[in-house]
Structure formats: structure tokens, C-alpha cells
Image (cartoon, rainbow over all chains, first blue to last red; front, side, top):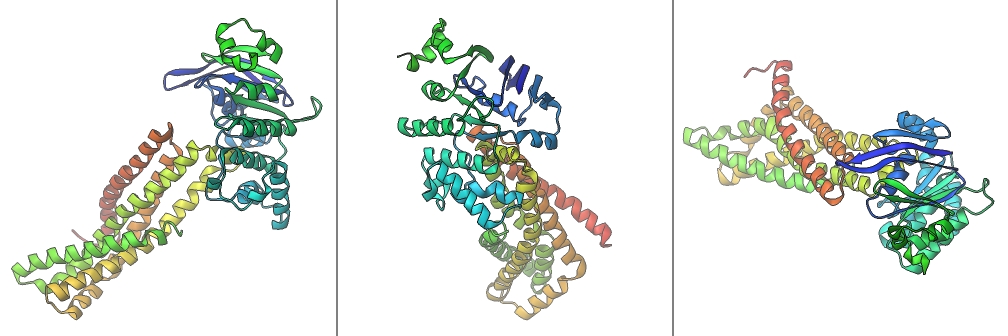
Length: 246
Length: 217
């Protein structure tokens, strides 16, 4: 269980988050929507303990991560894997080396085991043939698929976090990424690994998530299902989700 | 090590060669008016080994390697690669900073030794071919300048400079905020701060080394 309790955060005298509170299970499929600069990515970073709020508490399995030191946070981050907007691949490493990165860091596996694992996950995301390419040779969609493979190879997370996974991609590639996200979080609720997607691509969010949070002016303006989202009366929110109302 | 050491060789070679030649030209011209031109080697040797070599090479090093470290780590912060390391439970300081500090602290003294040698050869060129003085006398004075205090001074300083440049540059790289503008600010500050710290620490190290090695002003 992940719980935000009255979390506030200022950045450069701008209130990014204003006393937001919500909770979710690791197995939930949740989309965090909102315009640019509304603090969507900030929520993911707070969840991972990469940044700390100015006030409020963030509980992961009832442990307040806002007061935990870095070594203790590392133990909790094992619940998550994150795929950043541009993939965040290491430029100096090939695709295969990127996916193998954490496995090599752990130092517990033989090279043959690592290569087998790398190929397995690259095959799963559909780009095994790119194993020897460098990140700069990949398209945006391929970079994100490599980032997903790297996350999966590192460990089996309870929840996958996606930061703008379809932004800047053509619709077909975006659909491929969404299908992949759905595949990775498939299964019966409570047994599957969940996902949290941060995006302003509403159709993409609608194709993967079951619960929707909409941020406006640093606060959670809407929290509900797709049906409730579509039936909202708020003109601003209706404008934001107009792509799925057609 | 490769980027920091071998990759800096060309700039160190070029800077050292021309500093050695310019210094030799200046000194031999001034000493000629006093009729002491033959002592050019002694002054060039001491200046290069003890002071100008370590400082000039450290300044070049800060410009090339310090800015590179700050921008590389800063780009990794902006591109979220540093966040990825933290998510995987890998300490970014151990992974990114420590190897750079060790490499800089080892490679800058090595580069300084090479640069000093190049500068002395540059000085020799001026003494022999421009000032028309004896090359063997120049080199005998250089050999005399290579005593224990001068050599220690010439090696300790670049070791400290390398450590300072890497620490400052990595720290500013990891503190990068705000996209391209933040990256520019981090890189510029890394070079400026490294330059200032090299000059200031050089003065204090000179004083400390004078005390330790029993040299008097």
C-alpha cells in the first residue's frame, strides 16, 4: 500500500503540490493526469524517495519514507521499477549492456546467465535484434522499450512507474507501448504487478489504467474510474479529456 | 583514466610546449641585459617544475576534464540516469564520483610530469636555437634544479589540484537543476571555481611545502 498524506512541495517559490492525499495498492493500474508543470512526475519521484516533500507523509507499507535514510530507502525502492520519459538509458552502453547493467552490478550472475536474461527481456519487448545497437541509434519508442526491458531484468517489481511513456511517439508506436504496459500488468487484481502512468496523453492513459487522478493547481481535482472521468461536469477537465469523449 | 589521462595529452603537450618556449624567451631576454643569459636553464627549470608547470597544466585540465565531468554528470542528472542508479540501489557517488576523483588525482601528476618535460624541451629549443647558448649547460642546470624539494613540490601540487578539480566538478554536476541553462551554469561554475581554487590552494601549498621542506623565502 502506498499512501500520500497531506503532501506539499514548493519549487522555486511555486507550490507544485498542495496538501495532496491519496492511497493505492501495488496492484492498481492508476493514471496520474494533468497539464505540464502540475507535479505529475514529482509524485513518482516522491513515491521513490528520490525527492522529499516540504510537509506531509508518504507511507510505503506503513513506513514513512520521508524520514528514512538513503540505505533504508533502497530497500523500499525494490517494490518499484520506473521508466522515464526519454528512457534514461546510459549513452555509453549498448542496448544489451543497458539491460544487463543492474545484473552486472549485483555480481551474482555468470555472463552466460546475464546474456540469456537480457535476450529474454529484449525478446519480450520485441527488440532482441537491437541488442548491439547504441541508444543514439534507437528511435524514441525503441528507447522506451529498452528501458522497460532494463526495468524488468533488474527485478520483478510490485509496481511499474511510467513517466510520459508515449509522449513524442507516433500513434502506432504509442499503442505498442500501451499494449506492452498492459501485458506486463496483466492478471487478476491482487496478483498482478500494478502500474502508475503519469501522462497528459489521455487516450494512452485510458487504454491502460483503471483509476484516474487529475491534478490541477497542485491539488487532486479528480479521483475515480474512467466512466466517472467521462461523466465529469467540469468544463476544464472535459476539455482536457476531449480526445476520449469523441 | 583513458579520457582523463590519454585524452588530455594533446592539450597538455601544446600548452606546456608554448609555455616553456615563452618563459625561456622572456627570461633569456631579461638575463641577457644583465649578462647572465647562461642561467636561463636554472630559472626556467625551477619555475616550470615547482610552479608554472603544475598550475598551468591544472588550469588546462580544469578547462577540459573539469568541464567534461560537470557536464557529463549534469546531463545524467537531467536525463534521469542518476535517478535510475538510485532506484537500483546504486550509490551515484560511489559509481560516478569516486572513480573520477581517483583518476584525476592519479592522472594529473602524470600529465604534469610529461608537461614539465615538454616545457623544458621547449625552453631548450629557445636557449639553443634562439639565444644561441649552450644546450649542455642548460640541461646541467635543469638537472641541478631537479632536487628533492622541487620534485616533491611538483608532484604534490597536481595531486591536490586533481582531487580538487574532480570534487568540485562532480559536486556541481550532481547539483545540476533546470535543464540546459542549469547544465551551462554547472559547467561554467565548475571551471571558474576550479580555477580559483587552483590559484588559492597553490599559494597555501607553496607556503606549507616551504615549511615542511625547510625552504626560506
